[in-house]
Image 1: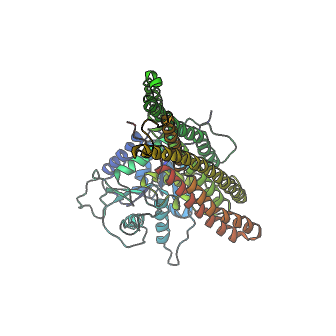
Image 2: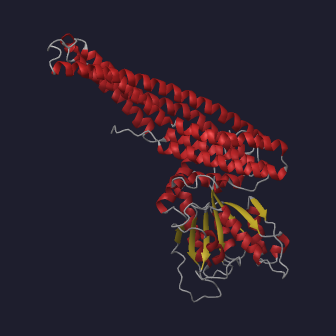
Image 3: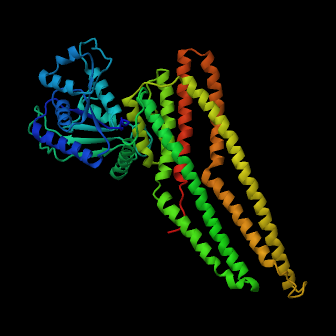
Length: 525
């Protein structure tokens, strides 16, 4: 059985060409990368390096020694780039080890220099990586010159937490390894004093929690059989879609049954209290406490074993969110858009969901092909929203109908009992004329109100109203997009699919955030 490829954690490297204390720096890099391998055993690592002299080659060598996958990024054609490399034998050895070689489309400037190409190279590596390793002496340099300082500052741009906390690179991290340069050998720097800068809203604790989730997801992926003959993008879509479908029904059924058991337990308790006041039932009414405790115990077991850990909810909510985002990525790829959904997805949602954006970013890096035509996506989504709006209306109407009817029964019953009690209290009706079956009226009214509250709770937990509003807002956009795809040219199609994708990502982000916030939480412990 061929298992589906796990999703890697992507490292990039930037640094000086003239590294002085080579072995000391190499030891720090080895320790850093080894710590990630040991902490996240189900998650493979990938290194992006340009294999320039010094830092790039040093980190690439460590990657090779640790068995880390290497992707080489060349700033321009290999033949010309080789003229800048001093140890060509080492360069060729690492190039042969690399799983992938990417050559950027960049040419020398009119002055014959490639400074802008090196800047473009550094920005590319920074953009594609989750974790940037910078072998840097801390000295500032000219901005946009392709140097180490320039790339570090590029990666940290736009992260003023007081102004813009939702940048697309929110969630990345930079590890700075102090590195003495040959041109300044007197610097007092210790390569073992690695500093880490977490970009955007993340800190060390939240970053590690996100990586834990990626590692847990990869542990599940390892168990999944890959399907031959499909693109990697489609394989991931099928995996996450299958996870969502398999767990959605389980999760919702468990949620409803847990609510039913709690309602049933309260009904047993109500029966016990009411029947205990009737002489002919008093002898056995107290035994109803057994039914109350038993149903509550079963509900507690379901909550503790299946719901409290949140695994079912995670598999349902997050898998569906990833599956839908991958479908949008496919549509963008299909029309030739070089865009990653991770730049537009879940940007304003809680930082605990950053791992989903990292996952989507890395999937796009692994595979930027497509598996279906963009029109198929639009047609499918149009039918989906149309069907789901109808379903949500039906579900809302059903539960609201039960809620209103039950509430009226309970309210009227309570009013009847209360009025009769006042009449007797005010001596309008003689004492002792209170109906013998008043206990049952109290019971029926109490249970009816309880069931009305149950119907209301189901509507809240399922989030039908919010989903319906979201679907109704985006559905017309898909209808118009389908019409434009027929009449528009290639550029218009790109614009339509891009804009529609962004809108769908916003809708899906809201869906994930809504259901993530509405987890099953009951005060039962």
